[in-house]
Length: 294
Image (cartoon, rainbow, N blue to C red; front, side, top):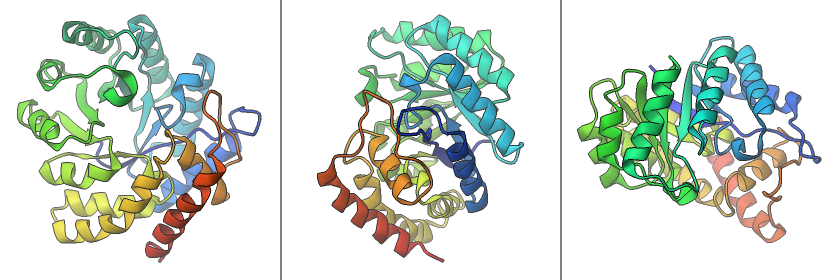
């Protein structure tokens, strides 16, 4: 079962925009030490939209090799092209991923029937656990709860990352889905509330910079200790907001670079954090790190 704090891993890059393998190793080691429960590789935070096919699969292969089965590795393999999503998902399975995360097809704006047929085709083509990913703010495509309920009947469609932050939507998904279908938060700010409703974890940006704090929060929430979970969540809220001061993953890569974990690299059309945002982000980061120091 995939549950708990699931870090949406950034893809470290050098200043020229090339993938930095040493940085990948440092980040994976950090998450293994700090108690992260699973990793998403080549998702939105990992800049999947600007990785080519070979880079994406090599990144998945590298993380799988570094993790050595200690925690699940979930590969981002979504595309707005069904055929390409099938190819990526098959390649991720061959690279050793435990599951795949499939974003809704962006730009095309398919109907709900088109979305159903898209995800069904991928699930039936590749025998690997698959997690749907709904983030309409980025894709202009909304996977509605009734369509999710249809897809949940497919055996290897095991869950959804719901990134709307809408708790009414989350409640509807939890009510309609079959047993064994899991709802994960894709919004750090509302993740605690979703888990208290019955969600199975948080696919998190914030976990990149405070992995132990996010792991403890998820463990408390999933363990039914609401008071402790709320106490752990409170110091994270300012950082949750600050990490979206510019479009993700700009701020989180800046924070990880400041922490000495990755080089100063991001791939166009994303750009490095604007200087006037550095002070508020630094303050939120330092406050959160101080609050969560041993």
